[in-house]
Image (tube, rainbow over all chains, first blue to last red; front, side):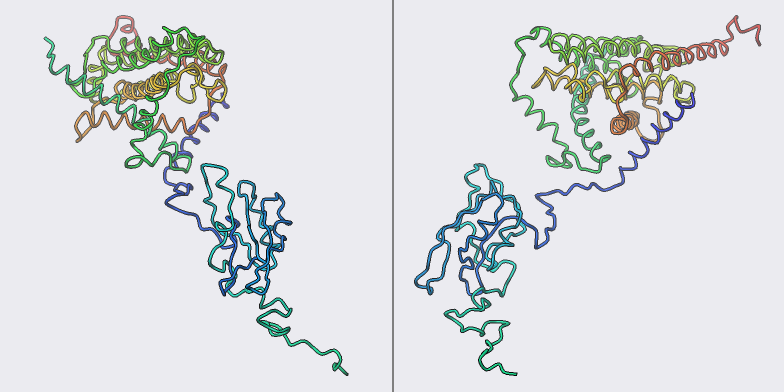
Length: 180
Length: 326
C-alpha cells in the first residue's frame, strides 16, 4: 500500500517536471536559417591556396598524398619553365567521398598550400561530383596565412633572393673568417 | 418535431470541426511533445507549422493503396472505416452548448458506451484480418484490454448518472450548474479517465500498438489512407474522451462570462493537453500489470464508488430502507 502511494506520487511529480519544460527554450539549432559558429580552425572542405603574389603555393611534393590515411589525394607534379622551373601540380584531385577530414594533409604541407576551411555543406546528388579537381580546389586567396610565401622563407637561394636575404633570415656566416 | 435545418447545420459544424480538430491535434501533439522535450517539432509549413497535417494528408493520399495478398481483403478494407465512423457517431450525442447537439438522445451515455465498444471491433478484426503475427498480438492485447476497461468505464459513469438522474448528456450537464460532478464523483472521474485512456489506446495504456514491441500493433499491415483512418480515428477518440470528461465531470458548457461553446472548447483543450502531457511523461504499463491494475484496483474502486453514491442518493431521497436510520 505504501508503495502504491509512492508510485502515484512519483507519477504526478513526473508530470510536473515535464510540464515545467514548457517554459524552457529548445536546444535545436534551426540550421538553414540559423547557422552555428564554426571556429576558423574547423576542419571542413579542403582548398588549395595561393601566396600573397597570387602564385600557387603548392609545390607538388606529394607529402599530403603520402600523409593521407585514406589515400584520397591524387596529384601529378610538373615543371613550369616560364617560372624558373618551379614545380607545380599538373592535376590535383581530392575524392571527398573518401576524405575523412582529418587534417593530416594540412599538417604535412610544407608550404601551407593545402588548408581545411570551416565549410561542411558539400552534399551532392551524384557521388562522382564529390571528386574535386584542381580548378574546384584552388582558391584565389591566401587562406589562413596571409603573408606566407614559401620561397621567401625557404632559406636557400632562389631566383628572387640570395641566401640569407629572406624574411627573418640573417646573412650567412663566413666560417673561414669566424675566428675567436 | 425535429427542425431539420438546424440539425443539418449542427451536423455540418460538428463533423467539420471534429475532422479539422483531429488533424490539428496531430500537429498540436507533435509540437507539444517537442516543447516538453526541448525541441521544436514540425514548424515549417504554415504559421508555426500548423499546416503540417495537411501536407501529411496529401502525402498519405498519394501513397499506394496496398493490401497484403495474405490478408482477408473485405474485412481488411472495411476496418479503418469502422474506427472513424464509430468515433464520429459518438459525437452525435455530445452537447457542445445548450441545444447545440445533433441527437439529444435520452440514452446518450449508453449510446456513447455502445459506440466505444463497437470501436473495439475494428481493432480486433483489423489485427485478425491482417494475418500478421504482430498485428494479431496487438489485437489480442486490445481485446483483453478493451474487455477489462469497458466494464468499469460503464460502472464509473453510473455514479454521475445517479446524481443527475438521467442518461441524457444535456441533462447531466444541466445538473452541474452549481457543482461540477468531479467533486462528488472524484473517484468516478479517475476511473473514467483511466478507462478512456485505455479505450483511446493512449499512453500509459497503449499496449495494442506498442511500437517498441509490436511494430505498430494491430495496424502494422496498414498503409496509405487506411493507416491514416486509424490515425485520425485515434485522435477523434482523444477528442471524444476529452469531450465526455468535460460533459460528465467538469460541467460541460457551464462557466462565467464566456459563451457556452467557448467554455466547452477551452475545457476540452485542457484535457487534450493533459493527455499529451501524460504521453510525454509516463512509460507504458507491462501487459499483465495493465490487467492486474484494471481488475484489482480500478474495478473495485468503481464499484465502491457506485455503491456509496447509490447509498447517498437513496439517503437523500429518504428511501424506506434508510428511514429507520434517521
